[in-house]
Amino acid sequence: MPHGQRDGQRLAGRSGYAVALTSDDVDLDAFTELLTPRGQEALARAGELAGADPVAAATALRRTYDAALTSAALTQAGLRERAKAKFGRDATVMYFTPHGLEQSTRTEVAEHRAHRLMKMIEPPAAPAVADACCGIGGDLLALARAGCAVTAVDTDPLTAAVAAANARALGVADRVTVRVGDAAEISPEEYDVLFADPARRTGRGRTFDPMAYSPPWPVVLDLISRARLACVKVAPGIPYEFIPEGAQAEWVSYKGEVKEATIWTGQGGGRRATLLPGGHALTAHGSEATAAPVGPAGRYVYEPDGAAVRAHLVAEVAEMVGGRLLDPLIAYITADDPVDTPWATRYEIEDILPFSLKKLRALLRERQIGNVTIKKRGSAVDIERLRADLRLKGDNSAVVILTRILDKPSVLLCKPLSPA
Ligand SMILES: C[S@@+](CC[C@H](N)C(=O)[O-])C[C@H]1O[C@@H](n2cnc3c(N)ncnc32)[C@H](O)[C@@H]1O
Image 1: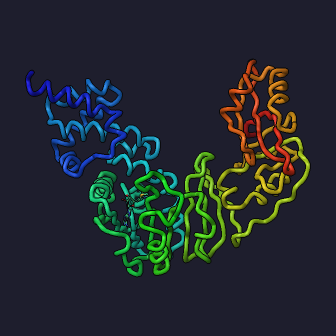
Image 2 (image 1 turned 180 degrees about the horizontal axis):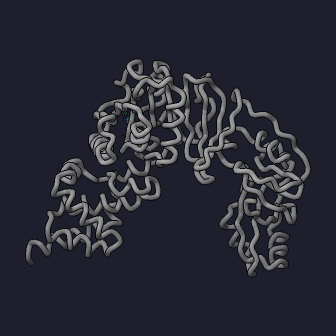
């Protein structure tokens, strides 16, 4: 068997798009070669082949390039495709690693943070920002584009090389310095702002425990304590006790999904919820939620945006819609009027019944509802199991909300209302 053909088969077996994209072995040598003129040519060819059969694409590239460059180019082209959802058109010229892409901040969220930060500081010509764990650069690129001079470190040499390449690719290299290094070695005193987005992955997958972040939480706290102004991205589920005294915690949702929390120090405390892409913001002082009134179901039920729920701002949303809670411990608001607000999704209540599979199935049958969106808060019911058990039939649609009302498991049968 000729050598090229044997290699081609090995490649096809090992590094079709799907395999390469889930692996974590984009390596530094191959990435460095990708940045050479020949590597760029291979990457451009791989980009043209995006969407083609992976085996055919690998075979076509192997006619010109060796196995390592072929694999690196195809992997990078595949990552660029995948990254378009987060980085839009920028993704077509950026570089990624699989983990780096997964952990990166999407452009709209990074830009929101960078612009907030620029408003907070009395701007020197270009505020100096230290990015303590930069990843592939989602945040540092937004900071640089907003006008900051960013010095960034990452412990992983490949990830740091990717971040530096991204700064060049997006034309902000003159404002960005990337080094391989440990966050603990940064001197926050030397910068106007400290930014950190610690890794929330361990060898066993994602972690929700800040003590297991990398760099670990005590290192982050030490950096924060020495910074004039600090901004730290954390998981939206961060327990309140981890939020440093006097800091502001901001929860950000994008298109209705909570993406992250950001801890800001040096600018006053409290809680804030932000909705992107609209830019709406709600704030409150202190960490204690205001108690919302509780009362009987009205004609409408409102599901507050997760950022408001995490920021303990449900009472503020209830006030906006003239509403009250169905249950003091659950974030469903009920009201008599259909107020249009970006802070909640509203539904018109058609029926309320105590939770019973038999009764719910009978009601859905009677109304010929074959298509349901099931939502729940305060209910332990397994949604997919319930959907199967309901044995739905019919052409009509409904929203089924499972919750507790004054501690009783209940079901609200609703229809969605489109925004006014
Ligand atoms: C969540 S990612 C940063 C993502 C980045 N903000 C973005 O938008 O692309 C966290 C990064 O921290 C790096 N890291 C982990 N421990 C570190 C440490 N002790 N010092 C510096 N970087 C570290 C990881 O290699 C990873 O790339």
